[in-house]
Length: 220
Image (cartoon, rainbow, N blue to C red; front, side, top):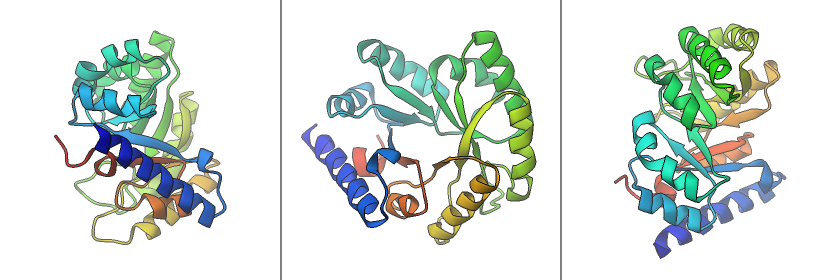
């Protein structure tokens, strides 16, 4: 697994270098290693290399992989970065620490109720469909302000916004737009940037970057 440690070191070095260029503290950027489709042994190697934040797309996959790892390695933070079905809310609240894909009223209501029932308070990012792509999840930009307000009324801990730019458009435009939406709503955190564009995201204020292939290589 030496290549994995080297990849992690390289990504961290790139984060530090970009932060220097844009006069940011590297500590203000949380690196989420996207471990989806990679087995527990691969995740364990990343933990051994000092990684503490991990992202998963599917609740079921995370349930199969992470309970044992977390028992062996206290202090890890697990981020749900894929779509969340309402029938998986209880499982997600039980396992994850942060939800990046809050995107509709019914899900907000289910999450709020389950967090009260479970006595847990997870940080939530609202996913915004900045490209208005029909096949992609996320709140329409025009509805973001109202959705933020309704989530706050439900006492959800909304900490920021998340986006996934269209592959055929300049990511910088979407990152800048998401930052404007966040500022307008008094939200300090931005979940944006992946392996191919995280340095651009850092320049536009990303506080959480979701990096998979640059760390783990091609999906397993």
